[in-house]
Amino acid sequence: MKIQVHINEEGAVRNQRYAFTDRFTLVTELLQNARRAGANHIVVEHYAEKQVLRVHDDGRGIGDFQKLLSFHESGWDDATIAQERPLGIGFTKCLYAATRVVVASGRQRVDLDTAASLRREAFEVETLERPQSGTAIELHGVDIADLAQRIATLCEGFPVDVAFNGQHLERRCAEDHLALMATPIGAVHVAGNRSGKATRGTLVFLQGFCVKRPAYYTVGEVNVVHLDPEQFMARLPDRDTLIDADQQLRQVDAQVKLSWRKILQVARTQMPARQFVETYFDAMKQWGHLDLLNDLDALPAALFERIVGYPIQVAYDQRDYVEPLTTAPARRDIEEGRVTVVSLGWPDGENTGHWMLAKHKQWLTVQAHVLHPDHWLRPHVRYIEDQDLHIEAQSELARTTLEGRWVCPLVIVCESVRIRLGDHAVDILDEGICRDGDIVVPAGECSGEPVRQLSDFIDAQDRYREDEMEADRDALADLIRRLRSSDPVETLHSLLNELQLGKYPLLHGRRFEVAVGVGSAPGCSVDLLTLDPSADGDNHAER
Image (cartoon, rainbow, N blue to C red; front, side, top):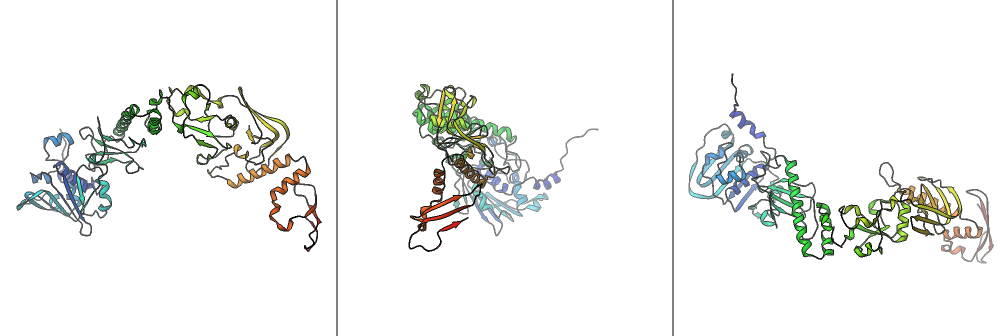
């Protein structure tokens, strides 16, 4: 017994209606046929209420009308077949999408009842008295009511001029609208090739229609690739996705990367080094060409930051303690030691001493890891977090534990804090420092801010607990004040200053005698020693 492939023709014709997944394939196939026929201009008219679609092109027309109803027979010339490999299923979409199709080309016209066509009934091709230029196709019973909202996107990369309901479409990604580079895979437009505003987003087109669209992109700021149809094929029947797309799109990315390198190599020879670096650094970083910086003296200013405030644990967009440099330091200044550059991770409670040392030494932080491993800057970067750092309280006065809502560190009050790292040392008088979970507080610190070096106050749900931060900051400030209280007059004076009593006219010029009880919330009595003659009321109060 022998068996062989058998085709159930009726079943194939009947079931092909389910092969198409996108109702707009009807439009793209008609446009594709017009393009292959050599059209320079295509007119599309859509009457949504009447469910009528008309497509008229100025191409070569149809020589053999039988090809319209011949499944998987393209009818195109040898050159088109060799270059684009048409498979002869495009027009059949009309038979499934419409109830009636009228086709006129040259001196021929046919009026098809699509249901009868699919039953394989025969239709007479009429002869026209007046020839029809190009090809005109009219479809009735077409349900594509939202075509007006999609047609511009469908045609954005199409190579032939298209007018829809009297308006010419922009076709902003078409080959005749972009500056393109010829490459082994097709024509490539690299966004930002002059401005340096590179993007990883790429629109990929095959035979004028999009086969890959990035999830997010900005019009005019996206790479565009028109693939060579002899090398690439789209998946049938909608042809909106490449066959083996994962492999093919890696090839596309590799070509865009190579195109960027050619652009960068040319720009490098035509621009001053500093201008080249500032313009194209981001592009080099995005597309993996940072080695082009290796032998240039100029550095990207975006890599450097100056420490201008008190380093604390915060989210990236709240890093007010650093500011970017507008101009990168000179190579000679770095190499000769006039400028010190260090690598630091964000403050995390373990490295705040390193941050404070760098701040007071006026060292610059640099993201050296971004650069190519062979860049000349790498050997001059100091990775100070890898070195032992010592934080010492000088002339300690007191220590106790802060009972905070969020943090409970040991607080050490002293006259100054010394930070030592190898041969480098600084004495800090006015800013507290987190050290191994403790807080060391020098004479000039009274703000309570060191709790923010100790914690970022972010909970398990990634919420910033601002109330707890403020409570702990105030509690630390109060604790510092109490620990430093050695003179009763100075202590009371400090407390009264915070009350801003001068805002109360009733108290102006008055003198009081205050007696304070014992405990964390003591009672006290207040006596008015001098009283304005015009004032009424008692001159004694207790609480």
